[in-house]
Image 1 (tube, rainbow, N blue to C red):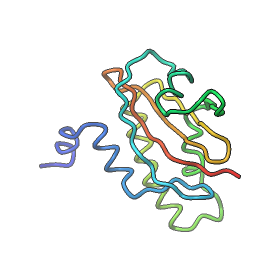
Image 2: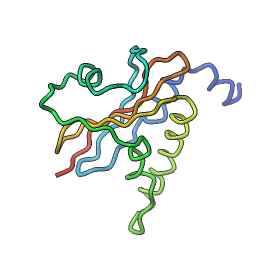
Image 3: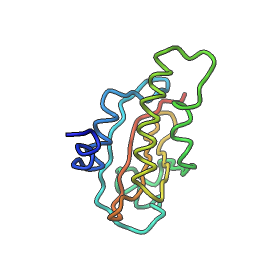
Image 4: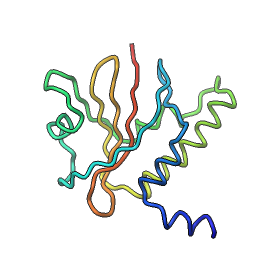
Length: 140
């Protein structure tokens, strides 16, 4: 069976999960990337009230919405000090970005918190359900 035939038999969530397995999101504390598979089918944008409900944070917690491309900036915009490790990580995250962009619409980047920030990149699949990625970013 060819790789394309295998990929067509796997769901988007399965493909995304396989591609983020072992990847760490760089910040002051490198953290795992997890796949989001929300069954919400509300119309875009995914408003901050619904977002707070889904992740379980109170109105007192800071929530911000950023351009979705900013999620990938720390991992894809090469710096002159990058070692082979960072360059290889960028190659792997490029595949993840392509999967997300090619399979989700109405992409949104939502962040909750100040120092320990829950970061979510979500979008709608072909059935209108919200899927994506989440990680923890430490910014002190």
